[in-house]
Length: 102
Image (cartoon, rainbow, N blue to C red; front, side, top):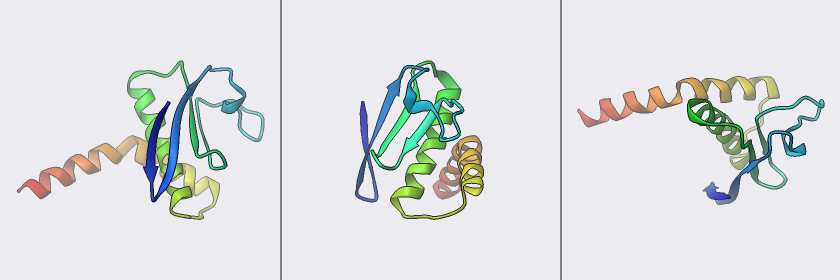
């Protein structure tokens, strides 16, 4: 289990079996990653790997940041933000690094 801190809150990253109850949403559907604000834990399917694993972790970290900084937006917007960052966040940071190195 990996531990990390955001805004003074200690979080955990925990891999669980793909059929774990921790990977079920409140509507009963299953997912591959879930952030639990009550336990400060990100649960990830142990079936994830490679680039998809990276995207799912990034997506879930966005939820952690929202919780840690008490950012309240409706769930549809939060999901959109998390998905956008998981797809393009690394490119934004890479360009930032290039621009700052000049």
